[in-house]
Image 1 (cartoon, rainbow, N blue to C red):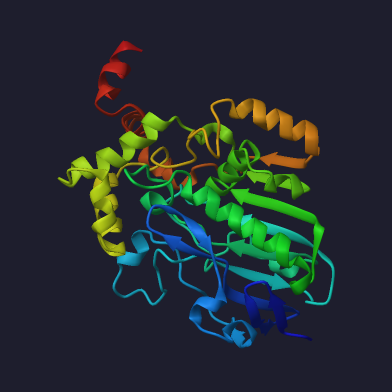
Image 2 (image 1 turned 90 degrees about the horizontal axis):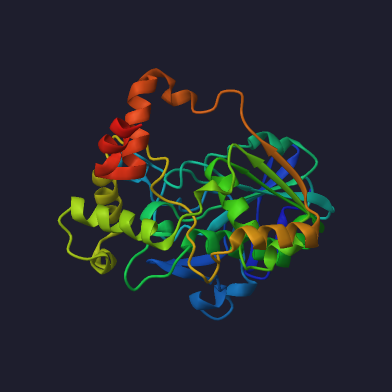
Length: 331
């Protein structure tokens, strides 16, 4: 079976895995600190690099997250993590494409640990792009851009649209699938001003919806709170930290809180408008997506052992901060 694909960003050699071919760590963008990504260009590495054969047989750099601070971890983590994994039955075929966006509360995840790995064994092309997490992808920082993580996802979708025929995919049969934060991301993209979603045919949302779109002031306060908890004067000072340093201050601030409400898509009146719900309805009427919206049988199972009182207190604090106690007394 053929194991080579030629794309708009280079020529790659994959690896056979049972009855399919994997292309791992294929770059699609450059992650810039708190900025929307630049499209990947092999030409930056020198003349002739575009036409060279590059081996895509190992996982690429993964998004920064708490796991990156474990010195015994052999997985590479970093801010410049915008790569995708492709599993295809045949690079010369024309199979439906499923693009999976992983969940993890906008704090955890990566294509090194697929959440829908069963798709690798179906008659589809399974694509899993990385997108930036936590402050790196969702923080509102002075001097930075907004909705960075969402634009990472849009860039990945565009790369797939541009290169579908190179890896045996059908550009006219694309499904976006997401779990938890991945589902919430897709719902936000459906509500956005981007036209890229108009070229997608099907949507699958598991345990996530549009409820995480927050206003600018709320998102800004999250970044400011992380700075305050680490005695950092201004969010613009976050530009000066290393990848590990930025991850560490985020870890300190979040601590043992249930991180269900810290990060997510933001109303910035650029990618996402204040009338995003109207935009969503307009898109649905225009595109007629085939859509599945689903919940799991054991939602938040990992939190069950904490007890309802503890969960209630933690979620109220995450949502309302110091006002949580007063709010609880008034209810």
